[in-house]
Length: 323
Image 1: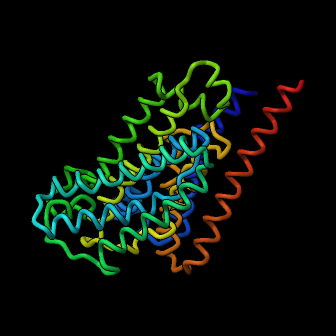
Image 2: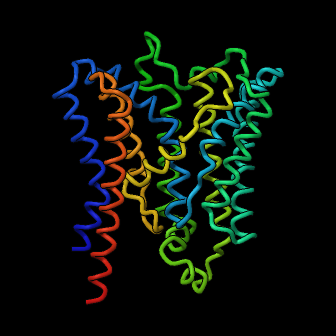
């Protein structure tokens, strides 16, 4: 029974993605199944998918990070400002991502040192970071010169088919593989799962809980920084009002992918599949002419069902233990 439950938790989201895609292929327009649309779905998934990699670590560790949307906006603004001041594209990208990492370090320090619940800390830093982004940009968009950064999520030009997908998508794939290896095959990964499963037991086993928490929040913001770089690439400007509410999409990707808000469960494959599910629904809905509110209702129902399934699995596991 346990093996069957783990099988469903791991491959269920993948089957769900396949079913949703086939459904839109059948009922949607022919353009939905085109290679161009598949590329578009992957490009649109890259931003949420990259930020969700870090959120997966946070949720597995039993936390939450509401500041990632604001960090994405701040990083995009910083990159645009640095480019405008004459910095090289590489230095601007590193500077923007570095600012994101600092935000995550602050989140981790506040959570561990003040012993305040992550929801409250990251709710506060969400507002602080968003306000900082607006202050740097003087509450307007920052135009930046065109550089190779703008091609990270651009559609492939004729003759570039050998790349299969834009560089930004490859970056997401590479980062996903690295995080998967870290979670499965390193002591740090085991510690992250241990903290989310039972923090007190992890302490008794000698796990440096505070250090691990600081690490996961720093990594969460770091991945949000990379997502901010992709957001800048997509918009070509630094907009402090962008990514409002994106943290909800990021959290939803993890939950739909089998991550548990109770902590101790989650996978990178599931998270990426969760992000793809949301993008596929929006792409199919848009091509069928469905209003945005209908797409939001469908996505919301999927999230509620995913959480309900997670709670059902936990109750079944608890009842088996009681026996």
